[in-house]
Image (cartoon, rainbow, N blue to C red):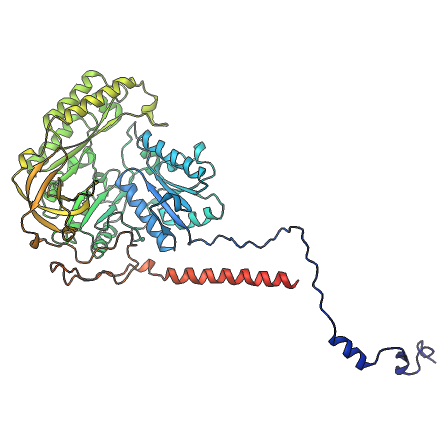
Length: 563
């Protein structure tokens, strides 16, 4: 039976007619084909190629910090992590891509400056990231809407927050750090940092406090007491000395309360710290409230007499009126404060006691204020921080009946006049003292040094003195300082066991920076050991990442052209 195709084609050659092109003709035509470009679709698409893509870690960041030394320590850690990740920290806000604003909530003026800085940054179209106590305590403030926030216990995640903010995202990290449900002191102490002064290491020994002062907003941000373990603090101090530091500041909201949450105390910590302090280097103890230092006075007197510890203590009294102290919920009376001062002055001759006073607290009468004036007249404090009361939103004191503004200003002025009526250092002219040189004066005319009692002594601006212990003769005294003439400049003693980092250098990231000093005193100092967690080749990583992004852009461009 014939198939269906039998009637159509008898042979395969019947499919090719005489009019069809031969294979040679087809090959010739193929060689003369002119390719024609495909017309591109000029309509915008949802996936356009962006050549200005954000590459995190390549921008410039300007940081501003307000407030206490604890806040400054947090700022140093944040700057160090950002620099370690490739960001460039700049002192010029105009050239920065990101403004990192680290705030203080103690007084209204500090928050006003913070708020104005946010407004200015937005006007200049800067990326804004905020940190510190203000956003931690009041993250829902209107002027913080849409901004990324780094909580006071989340500073170890600053790089993540900045990265995401540059991408246009708003990130808010306000949680507390805990270990098995127990609140920790904060971020790790071995994070990289950029010290504002390479000669001074600020160590936060705890965060928060045990008080409930009615005027304090910081409590809302820092919370209850949480202390770092002693071994971590001692290791942080040891690493600092290996990086050329010659002075350590211990800081917190209340150093006297240290350790009560972890079964230890402040004297135990201090005795272990002094064991790792090199000869000639010094330790300065931060602020402590009267209640928690009372039970340690004997040990504290011994520690403050140690040759490597400044005979200096900051003990805020706030008011000499028991009635006002009760309204403040300060948990001590004026007699307790006097006992602390009298005991330490007796056991530590020459000790400097600094204190704070609030003028115009709600309910303060003229009689209350007179008691405070009498206290200042009695002790002639060489260092006195005078604060006009400002009601902070959300605090019990803000709801109390306020002292009229004019009266607060008048009392502040009267106390200031009393403070400036005496000169605490006149009797020291002619003395010979050993001083540690660590800073430069505001007018850049002198170096700033401190003697054993942490009294400020201005010395000639001789580069060889920086970071060294020198002997001076006091020849002039002012209200806040003395001036000293070096006895024998050639005998300057270097307490550092390594050369200090350069200004702006990241702590713990560079292995070889301890070239011996050339003055003969510090020759042979040993280089610091590296800090392991952050020893990464960040610059190489940044170049690799940039090259990868550029390659991706080129591939995408070529692929689109070939479509």
